[in-house]
Image: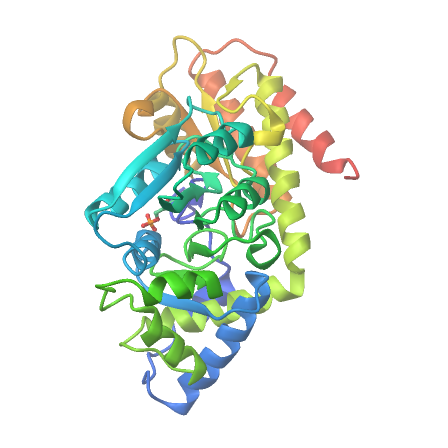
Length: 385
Ligand SMILES: Cc1ncc(COP(=O)(O)O)c(C=O)c1O
């Protein structure tokens, strides 16, 4: 049976039917009163989701656009940027900073590991002249499934005085991410992740410290310019023609998030990720992130069993069950596969995905106790947390 695709990848993620129906409506004028009303709700509700008093800018772009919107409004040529790299997306910050002429240094960790706060503290302590202007970091590193302790890392960055610029593309909505309380200076995210809408919108929130640095940026970007977006947010407008249909979908999705409650949404993601991790261990497969406390709640990376290839797992689970799981990226391609539990995901989805994975591995000849994963996931989900 086809036309029942079930996305268990880290984005795009499943979209609720009520959101799809909003998106399917005829486009409306982006300067109309009707659209202004949508924007008004969206801008208000985004502050709730981002747990911030600051304005949240919405760009018509993918998540990388918001990453560019962060650094291209802050970095001058010759600025020193320290990038904390857990994988592909941590590296992306470094590349964007380099594209603006920054002098980039990195702290890199092995696959599946996270940044040790003491290593960061020591690195910043060496910078006696306070040359490092910006530290970039990733909350949930989608290429490995590891998640940094952003709260601790940002407090260390704040002690040094540099600006913290955080990628929350697969963490906002899924994991607690509290920019105002944790002192995150700039936070970005993307729509096709925890927000339960298709790709095409990206988000950025910046605090007063970040605005001071923006004011010293010699060549702020045109399309991403914070000042233009701030002015627009305050007028319930957008600077350019936005993806109006996606905004209508976002309006609906934000209503759903508010109804669930952001804390409950975070807890749901944690519960699903932990249940999935327990099931993977029960099946006898190895997780890329060993320690639960370092695990992302939106994405779980898994090594295939010996003798069974990642492309075969992905092919069978797609062909037999219409379930999509992601391959590894770059050096991890064909070495790991990744399962998302991000956004519009319920218990049924997690149980089904584990069942489909077990059936796939069984078909491919992996020897294990059939049903152990499904049994474990059911028990884990039944536990009070
Ligand atoms: C952590 C993280 N950062 C950045 C991005 C880039 O987002 P996009 O592909 O929407 O440009 C992704 C996409 O998967 C991501 O997972």
